[in-house]
Structure formats: structure tokens, C-alpha cells
Amino acid sequence: MEQKLNRKLRKGETVHHIDCDPTNDDINNLYVFQSKGMHTSSHCTIYKLTKSLLQENIIKFVDGKYERV
Image 1: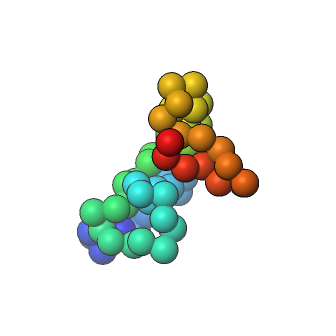
Image 2 (image 1 turned 60 degrees about the vertical axis):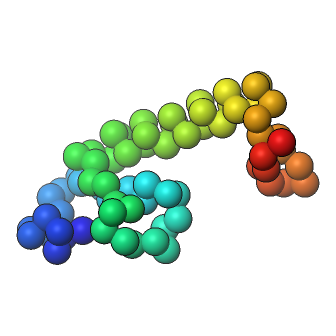
């Protein structure tokens, strides 16, 4: 990410993996949040989305995993 930005990450900046795969460091899969709090808020939206998908029976939780219905 520092190569794409052409600078070092600033204090507090956090790199986020868009596809939730921390091994996928493709530059198009990375996003820089200005703070850890903003990054945490982003992850909270994932949990809210998961809750909605469960309620709408689009996904379900089976044997320790989420899967598409």
C-alpha cells in the first residue's frame, strides 16, 4: 500500500482488505482508513449486514460456518 501511496503509512492509518482475505494483498483489494476507529466501524457494518442476511434467510449458520441458503 505504501508503494501505491508513494509514502509511508501515517500514524494511525490502517490498511483494510476489502474481500476480508488478509492474504490477498492485491492493491485493488486494499483500502487505507485514516484511523483504527474508522476501520473498526467498517467491520461493524459487516456484522450488521450478516445479521440482516440471517434475518432474511439469505444465509444461515451451520456447524460453525455461515453459508448461503
